[in-house]
Length: 252
Picture (cartoon, rainbow, N blue to C red):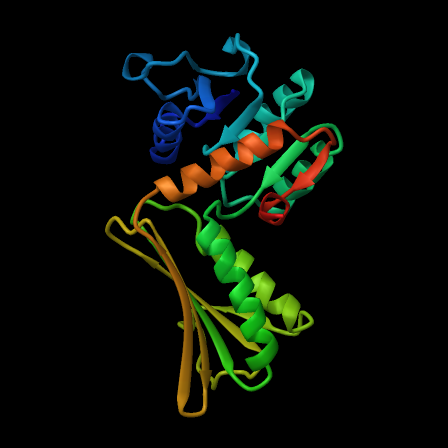
């Protein structure tokens, strides 16, 4: 049995993680951290902050805010608890701090916890190897109208995977409203759409002469991200070494 502390339990994904944990025979929610959550709405202990936590989980799953790392990771380090970071929107300064803390605890970080999205990334890398020098590549991402970060963390991960296959020779072009010029051959266009209740859709277009190849993934429920996060939590709870882990480690 893996005991999980949910950071950001009052959010949409935090609540979904709790529902999935409750439905599993192999996991248990030991509590949730969220200063805005009403304890009366939950069947687990709710802690407003680090100083209130009185449980010892096997792993933390984070679906809160990017800057929550400054409370969460010192607490995890002090109590020797591994952390699954599912929140996106981390700045370069955040990422440096996360890597520094991974010297003392195990941290699993992925921009998208869906197994399907990670398969998409693998397919996109293979397509880039075949088509990258001859085709223009554009990336579109769609999310609901209350998503804060743009482009999505998953879109950045996909773009970075493409660019790595192209020996980091591509320049990211975020929309084209500030441009009055022809498309540069070394551009990788990244476009964000926000509206409605779209859970998450990512689409990569390889545009050549007289043909277009599209690779896409669409999530119809947040449960796919929650289930992936829980799998990562179970995996990380069994890890004995400190350091950074990602979806490739889980899949292997």
